[in-house]
Length: 491
Image (cartoon, rainbow, N blue to C red; front, side, top):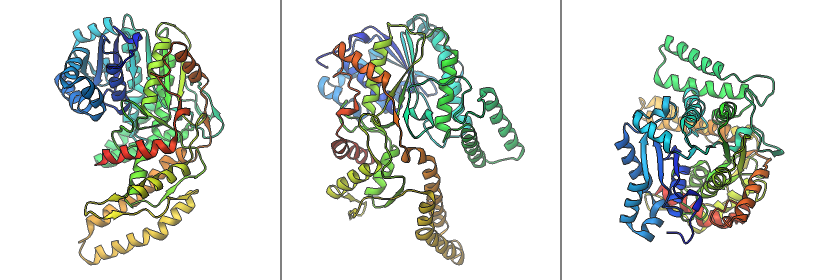
């Protein structure tokens, strides 16, 4: 395997929640690659039973390209043996009592064995239903904490949050913990029980109205945005993640608790190889739509900061934090930003230029074999008014014409009309949800994170656990890792 190992994980038992998520996959692969003598990795996975959890882990994690480095260096038999010996996928759900682990004997065994808990389970959908986001990001976090308190020798609970819980877009944004009930607008008090009551009342109203499943989903999404904006947050995701932090910080008692707050997570920088990504992430959806000729403009300030951080750097921050805190108990909650806006800022216009250069050199070929040529970088619209005007001028007339043709042809083009209408209104809604990220002018403070880097340097672990964004050459990263990785995944 690696020429060096992380000795601090030798013989340790670690529970990782959200194990089939993008970040957790990178985490599991790194631990197995750099410390195969870890005692046990318990991986909590949503599945009907433990056998299904094992199957899902094999299909979605081990068989992914991320594990090719271990496979190529050590062989398939070695990897299969390592996984069989060291990894125990468990059926569970953090939104349920006991994290959904039904086997009481297994739970008791875990309570005796676990040294470290890493919670990366979350719903990261900006536009999630409020009830779902509440159950996973808030109630789920509380359930993880309760489980951690039952573990006899647990050293620490590490919780992955988001830097955007800050809700602000200007100035230096500190690594500061929320006080229970704190809101961003300072004019209200955030009562978790009241928020859950609001959800229950809304459900009752919708049932009384015999709302369809679709109507219920739309109403719960709107409720989440309303409650978030009432208290000063921009979307349901950052709002419920902030509540999750509050609950954990308030109820942790003597448990050592660390929070990692990453910004927008992108493909791997170096490990296990550059450009590994899974799923079309926020940034990628714009880049790929541009490369395919489907998007020629965007809503955002070209001069605002776009705070991106590669997934493997976030994982290295997690591992470094575990090493630093495992045997150094602190009553205080320590927060680490995993970001780039302070030390290696990137602008929206930089990203659009890199995309133009990439697709000029590597033009997209559509399903008919036709080459799609990009002629210029995406055009920015710095105000919602100008963005809506552009859509109303160039797209709504076409939609109206299609509506007329559909009506006079006895609804022959009904599907085409509905699809086009959905795409236009979805584009407008997405721009509203992504607004805080494309009009961002602040910088995330890294006082604690810089101390962590120095601590890793002192024990000669700064190369193995590199999480310093200053080493990233953004153009090289996008041209040779991020965009090629996204294109490869889509194919």
